[in-house]
Length: 93
Image (cartoon, rainbow, N blue to C red; front, side):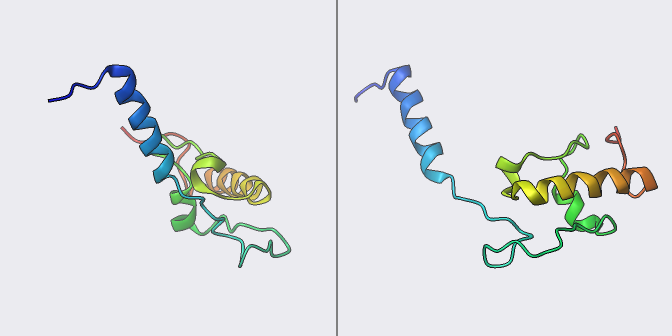
């Protein structure tokens, strides 16, 4: 039985993780085109909850796949929803 060193095991895990990653597309763009005007509805809580983690922080672009333009619009929508009281500022314990 061949033994694998820790360094080799680490390399294998990195390679597998790299292979699994798929390029995410922006859920707001239609067929790769950015529709104008750029707007994310602050009342659409289902969409906004997908863009917020359990602690209540906005998930970064590299995890959600949103474009930079829409990430700014998401930030504004989340801040508006929090101000109105639709979304919590902090996660409930």
